[in-house]
Each structure stands twice: as C-alpha cells, then as structure tokens.
Length: 312
Length: 298
Image (cartoon, rainbow over all chains, first blue to last red; front, side, top):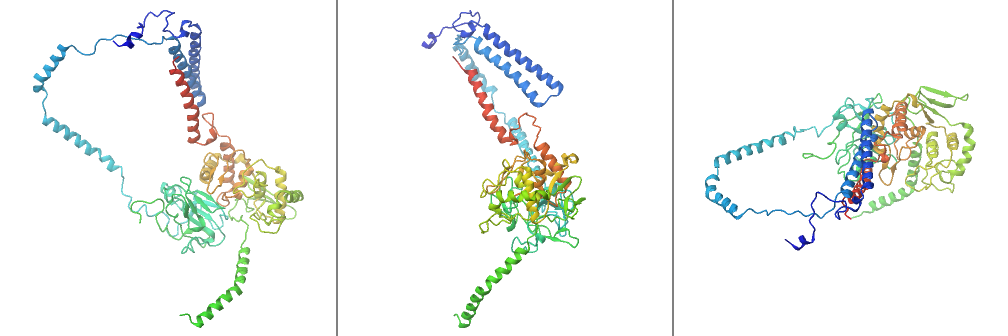
C-alpha cells in the first residue's frame, strides 16, 4: 500500500449520486447534455434513413457518401459526448488480490516438474526429423511458382520489331500514309501495316512519324536517305523505361517523354539532351514508293526500348 | 618541310576563299529563300484545305468557303480588310512589321514571325484567344488571357493579313451535331492527351514551355488550334480528317469542359496529388481536431 493509494478515494462504480464529486460537472444537470446528444442521435438516424433512401433510388455517389458519412458522424459525436459529459470521471480505484500463488502451491508444482518431468518431457528424434523433412519439402516446392513466374525465355523477341523491309506505314486506323498527308510540323503515331490493332504492335512497333521539312532530311551522318521529303520516324518507346514518347514540341523540335522528362532532339537523331534516357531513340529508315506510299527500308537497326540483360 | 609550291597554293586558296566566299553565301541564301512554302499542303481530302467536298467561290472565282458536313471553313469578309489594316498597324506592326512580314519598323530583322501566308485561322486563333497582342513579346510562350480585341476585330486583322497573300486554312465552323463523342475521346487520348493530359488541364513541357488548359475555349478555337498548330503544338493536317477533328472538338467542348465529377468536386482534375493534398489538409486536420476533443480532459 503506497502513499499514493491513500490519497485517492476509492469509489464504487454503482450507485453514483447526482451530487457525486466524481461526476462531470455537466452531468449534475444532465437535461441539456441529454438533449444535445438526443439531437445528434436523431440526426444520425435521419442520415442513415436518407442513405437507405438514396441507395434505393440509386442517387449520385456524393449523396450516398454524404448521408452515410453524416450518419456515422452524428452518431459518433453523440457517443463521444455521452462518454465525455455523462459518465463519471475517475480516478477509480479497485482493490485486487495478490497475483502470486501460495508457497505450498509453488513448491508442489516445482516438485511435479522435477520428479515426473524427466519421464514425460524427452526428445523425440524421429518425429522431429519427420517434421523437418515435411517442412523442407514444402520449402522446396514453394520455390516452384517463383521459377515458373519467370516465364518463357524471350529469345530474340526483344531485338526485333515487326518493321520489315518494305512495310507500309499505317496510322492507328490502318490507313496507309502517303507522301502528301502530313504538313510540316505534323506528327502521327504509325505502325507497320497489320499490327496497328495488336498488343505487340502497340507496345513494340509504335513509331512517331514527324514531318520536319519538304525535302530529304539528314538527322545523322550515314542516314542521308532515311527521311525522304522530311518524314522522320523514331521508335515511340523510350529508351529509359519504355513509356510512349508522344510529346512533340515543333518549335523546339523536341520529343519529350511524359514519364521522366527525357528530351530527344528530333533534328539530331533523337539524341537525348536532357533526362535519364541513356540512348537515342532508334530511327526507322523510310522511303517513298512509286505510288507515293511511305514504307520502311528495313527494320530498326538496333533493339527498341529500354535496355535488357543481353542487349548487345 | 613546306615547299614554295605549297605556300603558293595555300595563299591562292585563302585569296579565292575571300573572293568567292560571299558569292557562295549569296547563292545559298537564294536557295534557302526559294524553298519557302506554305505549311498547309496536305493532299488528303477533307483535311482542312480546299481539297474538300464542298467549295464555294464568289463571282471573281475566289474561294470564300470550303468544307464538308463536319467542318465548314469560311474566309473572313473582305469588307473587314480596311478595318483590319488599321487595327494591325496599331496593335501588331511594332513587332511584326507594317507588312506583317516579321520585320520590325526600325528596319532590323526581329525574332518575330512572318505572318504572310499563314492563313486566317492562325491569325484569328492568336488574336481571338487573347495571346496576341502579346503581354510580353520576349516570353517563351504567350499565355492565354482576356482578349484585347473583340472577335470581329480579330476577324478583321485575319482578313487584312489574308489579303496580302491568300492562304489556308480559313476559319473553321465545326458542326457538332453530327460529331461522335466516343470517337473524339479515342482520338483525344491518342493525339492530344500526351501533352494536354487526359483531363485536358494542360501541363508543363520542356524548357519553360507548357501546354495550356482546354477549359473555357470555344469550339472554333479548338478546331483552329488543331489545324494550325500554334506555337509548340504540332499541326494536325492530313493525319486527322475534318470528321475526326469535329469529333475531337465535340469531346473537348462537352466531356473535357463539363466533366461529370462523381464526387461532386473535381479538384481541377489534377489527380492523386490534388486529392492527396485535400485529404491531408482537410481530412487529417479535422480528424486531429476531433481526436483532441475526444481525448480532452478538463
């Protein structure tokens, strides 16, 4: 029994009188508080009923949310106010019995452990070994989905696209692009004919076609014939993490990647001039056939998109 | 090591460089200037040029409107050209030159674009959207603001500039009644959303430029922007037909400008950042106050 214990007045929880000093001040005249809490509960009930009605008539989501939220809000306020203002505030003290067992009980228990335990509690090597074997096999089997989730080997699919020698350049709707279609400063997302509606086409083959001039345009040494009549084509897959590089700023002649703001210079072989992209966007060599259609001289000369383990 | 012959050849080369170098520059300059062409040269039918289903000419044989059931392109009235000349000299000539050719009045070549041959839609877009006359001619990008000139004055300036060298596109009048919103949504996602965002709110671009918000823009200006490619925006000519442009305009003026916000509060359509901010500032703040009240002891 400490001194602190002596300072507190033990109060039993039942039978509080209205003038008990341990009651909240407001609880001595509880009418007003009761009214406020009642109003809260009534409002909460109304909100819940409104929520039911809103749900019944399939009202807009914000009405559903407002009525249900209002219901919980008012009921919650009422409950908290009830606890705060109508319940007695402590401190409350309750005597408790000693936790420790009697000395006789403890000695008897110790005797049981010492005298009889030696026979009951012994090592069971066979069961332990079986348990270990079972869990060990489970551990090995648990690795299977990990191995399977690695999927089939990509082989050469990362190195090539569907652009082949002579592929027609088509837009999203499958219409072949002709030499007079785009004006200077125009951009279009194009695909090799036949892949514009396929997953692989949209993921791997997507290419931006930009017209930068009226005449053949050289983006880099060795690419003199790649951009006939000013039609420049670059892979739309960012070399950083593979986002579609679709933001073309025609005055700055920049292609910007929306994910990490890599900027590629359109007139200079799409060399990255800002951002995390490690390599230029691969350029697709184009030619215009005798009917005026844009076609590819060949596929891309290097793998498109982000780097990978065996990328040469 | 250096023989007299080599020295003589070297001297001869230097002299001829000075003698003929300017001539080479002159010839190169002449070639460069001869390659200037108007930007609206798509050969595709119904793509914003007079290569369209319906072409109307006046009695002099001048095309006054062209188009199809989706978009009609109208020339600004030639009767406005005199007014346009006066307005141009007051508001535009100090930068673009009195003949709209980009040469300032003091005779030096400025960095101001040559407006001749750009077509009435270009002029009308820049003036009627309030970007011109520019608030700050040296800024990287002219921002949209309350127009200084009313729509009729913008048409007048477009009419006068067009009278210097008639060119296309004329001012588009989209027929939104026949437009298909769902097609417009798909085309918007493919062609516009990369810069203007899928909500149409615009975003920052490279080197201090930005793509503007698409809210509060009349339909004809949306069509003008698509067809002329103002500033850093690419031009969409042969890659979008008039029918497709009409679909996009319909989508922008309905779903983008009047979005159906299920939560009742769009927060500018700025996505998780705006929503997270409101959640933190309002939600967590109010929760903290409530928690304080619940746990308070008096």
